[in-house]
Structure formats: C-alpha cells, structure tokens
Figure (cartoon, rainbow, N blue to C red):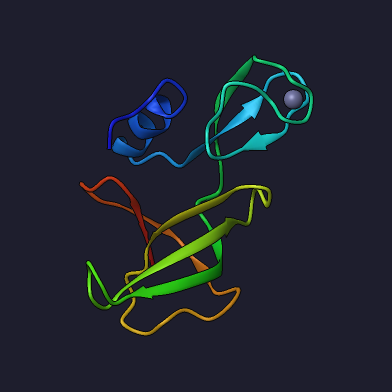
Length: 114
Ligand SMILES: [Zn+2]
C-alpha cells in the first residue's frame, strides 16, 4: 500500500496505533476514507481527530480464493456512524450483524478487527 496525499496521515497514525478520521474544521463532519474536501460544506480545512476505537460489523465476506478462509468485514464506527472501514476478522467464528469489535494494529496494510 502506497499512501497518497489524502491517506498518508491516516497510515502514519495507524502505524502509531492511533485510531483517527478526518474532521472538517468548519462544519465538524467526520469522514473516512480521507479526502481533500468536505462533502457537506466543501471546506478544504480539516484535522485528524481521534475517535473511539469501537465498531459494529455491517457486513462480511469469506474469501475462498486468495486467502482461503479469511473473513473480511465492513464495519461502521460507533463514534462516527458516517464512517465505514474494512479489514480482516480475527475470530474463528463468523461475525454476527451489529457485533461490536475493536481494532488490532498489525504490521500489515490493514487494521484487523476482533
Ligand atoms: Zn464541512
């Protein structure tokens, strides 16, 4: 994964074990994935904002091709419900809809969830 202009700060925070999203400096909307401007007010001023490291499982797939048996989840941040993220599911049992999870920061390019 090569960080780009918008995501470099997020990858740097993740490498430090910090769980952050962008927050618009003008209207306060939090957003993820990172982007240059606020979709709500078009402001280009923003900051990285720490958020509660808790998510709810929204959906998932089980990969039977490249990483056989790996479950990939889409999760919604409980502290910032407009933000969704993806990553590997670390439990042996498949998740349940709405199941709460927390991030695990690994050496890899993604956050894992347990
Ligand atoms: Zn805004």
